[in-house]
Length: 245
Image (tube, rainbow, N blue to C red; front, side, top):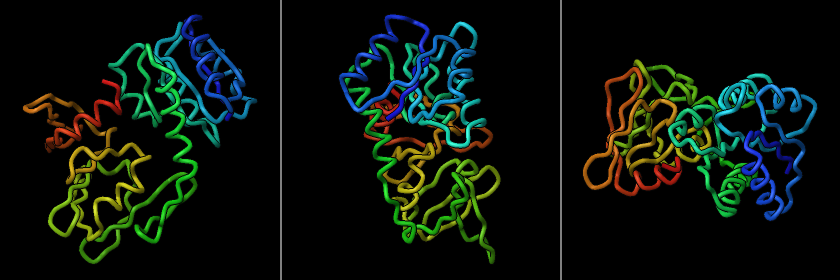
């Protein structure tokens, strides 16, 4: 696994390098301490995983992630490793695989890399949920009146299970599907979606705010739509663990 590290703090950088070497089967192909140096040195390298700090002398890791995703034909998986917990949602909007808060452990790094291995090894049963893939874009067909509408994951705010159906909420409409919630979860969980309740699958990039409410739950509100959803207690716990908050 080819790894590139962007970290401006020498002690933190050396510690991450040491942890990766202890984990093994890691080839560190480059190290940079600034945005400019990182973007320059990554151009001619094959990179599987990119570790990014958030705050850099000449920019941010979020800016690097955006340029990498938009500018590379085969962008690497991105893991943020930082002391700043408040940027977690922004990181997942940038398609990060994980967000490690300093001081993280060897086990934290291993778990993040394991997520990538699981993605690489995952064999989705596309017969279960009819999806159309064009390059890296997934389109999800749903019925609307007498038509079939193809939805991009980014169009979806959340999916809610209701009796024997699921309701798919976009900015302007609700679509009804007879597919099960777990079927959507199988195909969307690596696209920024998270099961916050047995009945709700939420697009993390559409969240505006998560407010703590009774029994350690979250009340989630969304960008651009008035809807709100309450997580389960377990869903809130898993979400905290996932976002390292």
